Amino acid sequence: MTWNELISAIFLLFGVLFILIANLGILILPDVICRAHALSKAVTLGILLMLIGLWIYLGSEDVGLKILLTILFQFITIPLSSHLFIFYISHQLKKRKIEGTPPVNELDFK
Amino acid sequence: MSVVLTICYLGLFLAAVLSLTRLIIGPTVLDRILAFDAVSLCAAGIVILFSVQTSSVYFIEVLIIFSLLGFTTVLGYLDYLSRLKNKNDPEQKKDYDLE
Image 1 (spheres, rainbow over the protein chains, first blue to last red):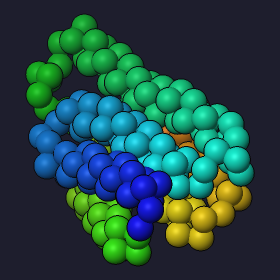
Image 2: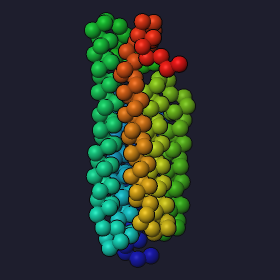
Image 3: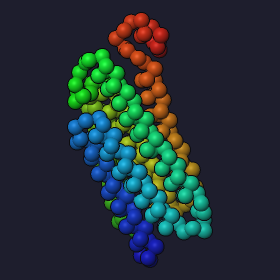
Image 4: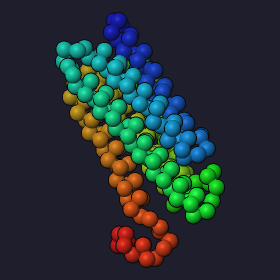
């Protein structure tokens, strides 16, 4: 195992660890807002670490700027989708507060 | 390296199984949308591992397409839900009925 493979393996393992923790958070956290919070940050970091590991493993001659483009794309899309999600939920909660119906903890969006 | 790849594959499959559990038992629709987004990101991670395993460059486009599919799925569902103002009101249900 060369140095490149060793460093790349460390990055890949940490990325998988972050993604695993994020998905565990999706399973066990109590509320839909907490679950969205767990998904957005940890998965963005995990995908970033895994892509850096791939970049180190393949070397920069073959890949070039393609992985940088992918990292940029992931950094735009994952937080944007999570932000739209939370925006929708807060809009619904505000509407319910005006209408005077249920408390914040019972998020029964159906 | 193959031991590390096996551990990474098992971790990502375990993560996808956890999110699929939330997708099945999720009490609301929004939980299911979020869980599907997480599963598609796990699929993107599996594509990265496959690219490491075959040491090939050509899976990076597949990765971009996978993440784009997950993103547009979330976008489409949220757009549909925000158009659907009140399901129980028959006046508004008539406008957004799919059948």
